[in-house]
Image (cartoon, rainbow, N blue to C red):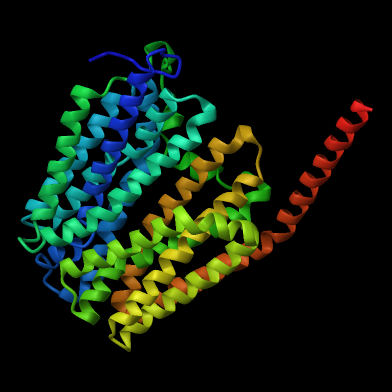
Length: 431
């Protein structure tokens, strides 16, 4: 199929159908990725000679995925610009399905790592999906359509863990096989129904080797002097959140005796709170407090949530788990929106894409460092120490945001002065 669809195409029904298909692909793709979340510790445990090392191994499995995604993501984006969205998207889906299949069938610990490595190397399909949407929409409409794509991903991440937990009642391999099946189904449906979005005349003629360098965006992330402290706060927040994401299933298994189904429901709770806050509350809080105050207050609440969760090591009660996770999910959503807003405000329109890429690279780096540190501290020093470490990292993020305040205030004052000058100029021209 070589039919192409773009923003200049007169057939709006083709574009609408393509967008619906992308939403379905995103939903199924995210479900496939999140089905496995509750199961990783339980399946990994079967291959460990020393169960006390579970948190460390889960940390390395998570970091292996993050490292491979960090390496491959820039190359996948460049390849989709060169060869089109369809072939790269299908390669990503096939690779992820193969990775889940290897992980689910298992047989040895090294096969679990192989499965995560393959999935990580082909795990950049979300960026390809966003590229597809950019191809078929006008610039003025992209924010709206990107938001809808985010909602589809959020719904998939809400359904996936619960579905995975239920499938675990069959056996621990079933969710991984289901994830592989969902991705293969998505691939087949996309192959027959989804047209190419990037015309050949709009593709780049060649790919520079530098564009495949995964460290390029990381190296350039701090080139904006007025953004360095904000970007560092963003990285520290991501670093700490990955400590929680890596160890929460192990914590609930160790201290509360939860099984995979119960862990799936726990992860679903986090997704539900996140969707509620993102869809309903964040706009109200931003209007009331502004990005700066909201960012500081929400970071404090995130730090407290880690201490609440860490206290489960001493008081093994599900109440602390529910309170801690609701506090983490709700305040974490507010932090992300506030920090993204502050970072976006500090640069011009022509740099928004590069800044977005820099924040994504820093988040990916947090997905490598956080699991390694969290798994190590959890195993060597204990669960409370792991969550207390995450809380301390959040304190550092608060310090970074506080240091950035003078820059933010000066920038805001400058923008206000420019607005007043433009208003005065327009008024004088009218007179």
